[in-house]
Length: 266
Image (cartoon, rainbow, N blue to C red; front, side, top):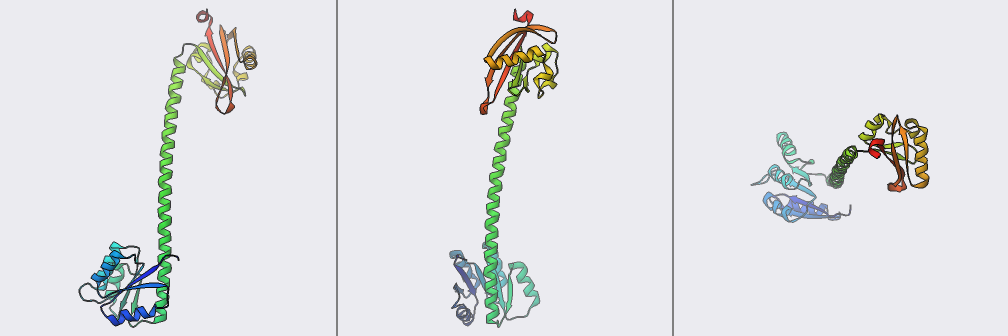
């Protein structure tokens, strides 16, 4: 990985720290050392540490207490314990409380320790990648939630706008109906339904199934002339039928018909 790997070794015995530094002399790691847990925490506060190797038994703050603090302040570090004591209870405590990756006995095998550190670097790299992916996923989810909220608000606004438009159409005291250029009825107000005694079911249906041949012919006349008016009968009601071509978005066109009964049209 491209990131510089810094390993902090903490042990109250200087010869142990010297041995660790010599062991990794030819490895691509930066080795930092501390002789106590308190000193180790000061280094961690100033440095970006990827791996911590700590002795278990140290005066003052022992390895478990130290690594517990490391886990609390730097949860991303990979933590390893060295110990010359075969204390099972202590091992379990260290693993549980300090979230330890490995427990290595003293004296250690150099090759085994190198392999352990190499595996720890891979583990750190994978965990870091997972965290980055998780952060990116959370960011994408937040963006998606925001987009959905905006979309929902937009749809709610459009729904309210359409409802208001329909209420306005219904309040107009003349019958209004709209037909697209494919012949489908796409708009109708309640006055048209009341005057012509037709059903709201005409919406979405072909005009040829809902209107008389005279009205269908009138619609075609409007398409050709862009505007027309004529007195005729719709479902037994005589009146004035006016029509005009109306352009919609995306180059869509339609015909708007307005019908006034004869007594109102006079």
